Length: 89
Image (cartoon, rainbow, N blue to C red; front, side):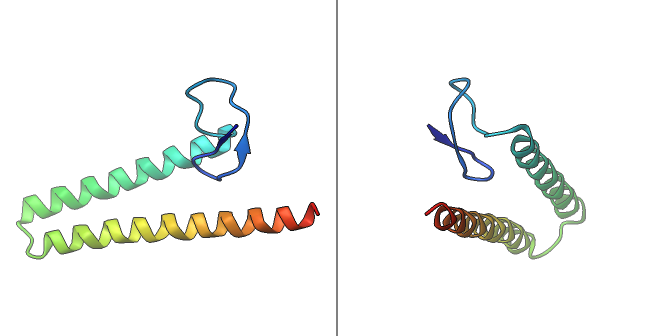
């Protein structure tokens, strides 16, 4: 048994390299990675092209925002799983 990288739900592996419980989770994960990559690309081009001051600080803020979003998503997932577990009792 494994846990989904997106929603954290336990699931049985169908393939040895499977990381997601369903297609919707896989798509959501990759969409977020794609959007974050685009955000990082736009920032890097602006930073280098305009020689912006404070670029590293801004980069750190972007990454901190991503880390905060990941923590909030994980906390929400844990709360949801706790509620589901309590319903099953």
